[in-house]
Length: 169
Image (tube, rainbow, N blue to C red; front, side):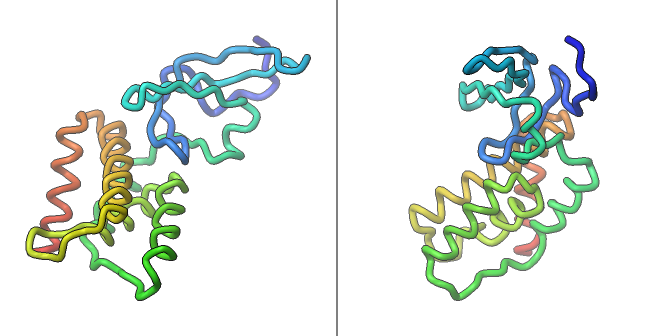
């Protein structure tokens, strides 16, 4: 395959796809679509048992990115320890904003959602939709922390949990 410019992603790389979180590039393949040869990244999301084909020339444009650096992960952990910022806007409006942050693929924005929706046992119950958004954000954050540290999701979940608990104290 002769490519004029080297892609920033290669097979076996872990990447973050905004709408789906952490996946792994399993291959780069060429497919003919409507008579045009397209080069595609084949990205596997094991957890979701899903495979995505992303045109290589569009990958960066649609927000696919490499894993965050350890610095960004550290910043996300610091964000978790911050004070929750809950706007007084209607829930539907806030839910929309949380959803946008989760799907932005931006680790810090995702950490903000986790921080803002986290509840300790003695706080009021979360609504179903709050819980859904919280869990989606938490899962994205945990998976990326795990992929960056290479320590596995259990360790990553503990790291995230410790950060959240430390702020309550």
